[in-house]
Length: 66
Image (tube, rainbow, N blue to C red; front, side):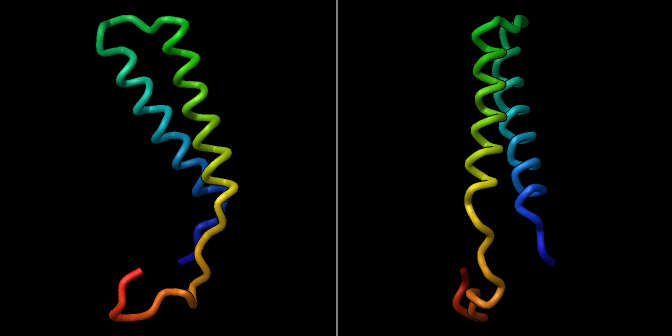
């Protein structure tokens, strides 16, 4: 199964954003600084994950792991 770079980046950004937002609201408030941190986590995950290429399918050897 092939996963496109865009789909991989979208899932990573959703996970990063959800994690940052969940951590930010632990005290019952969502401050401006926490909002900025959440946005930066989403944008960082999008950019970094999109930039890293997927591993070619032929580089995985059976019985040897990744």
